[in-house]
Amino acid sequence: MYSHKNIWQAIDRLADNLGYSPSGLAKQAGLDPTSFNKSKRVSPDGKPRWPSTESISKILAGTGATMSEFMSLIDPNDKTKASLNTSKIKPEDIAHAAAKILLNTKSVLFNTKEPFKYTSGNIGPVYVDCRRIMSFPEERGTLMDMATQLLKKDIGTKNIDYIAGGETAGIPYAAFIAERMGKPMLYVRKKPKGVGRMNQIEGHFEDGASPNVLLVEDLQNFGHSKQIFVDALHEAGAVVDHFFTLFDYGIRPDVPKVNKNMGLRAHHLCNWHDILDVARKESYLDKETLSSVEAYLKDPESWKP
Image (cartoon, rainbow, N blue to C red; front, top):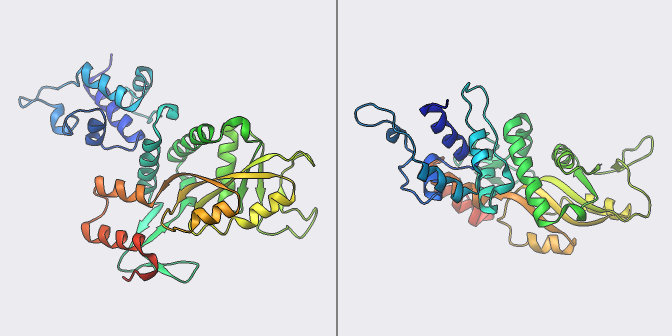
């Protein structure tokens, strides 16, 4: 028999898996934002207050989750955190959930007083480290499930023959996605190996097959770095119409043109606008930091600490 604690635990897990706070989940369900607050779970006289069946029904309707999925989030032993089937999650929920995972794993960082120095030589108050996600298996699994869902919906499984990771950060995520989609994997070096077969593309596809290859990298900022990988795949006879990143900066107005010139359509889980939206709603940043970061994202070139 499930306890009062188990049922509320399932609600908290559902909220977390979808990237919501309990109050955010309540709003998504069309309920009062305070409905799932900790203080509402016990009556003034100290007796347990259970969520109503109507509330649970509205939660499921508002998120697209099923009752069986909700029940799977109840764990009487409280040893593991069950996962939600992400096939029901809406696109806007994917961006919200991905942004929250990046924030919670500190894969995105903020420092307005001692800004980060970038490869370009510029400085800024934000830094993205998508490689860090590899070390968080549960969060990594959720992101890769959502990536697979997004790619199946936006491109279609039958339109992807191979999944190729760009050296180096794109390689693990190409592997995770290829495994989930049941597709053969490749990885592309920045230059030929220099020994042995002198390969720039590792893996194999049949000569003359003109396969449709999905290129995977960890993130996109200016959009130019993938040209090396695209050229190598084209030279090998592949068709490259799509590429995927976990994170897209989304602040460079010329990037869509860069992608178009390469003949590419971009797909990503979230961008800086999603990160800031979650940071603002969940109070991850103080007002001063938030204001400074927003100023940077609006005009990176003129930003100053």
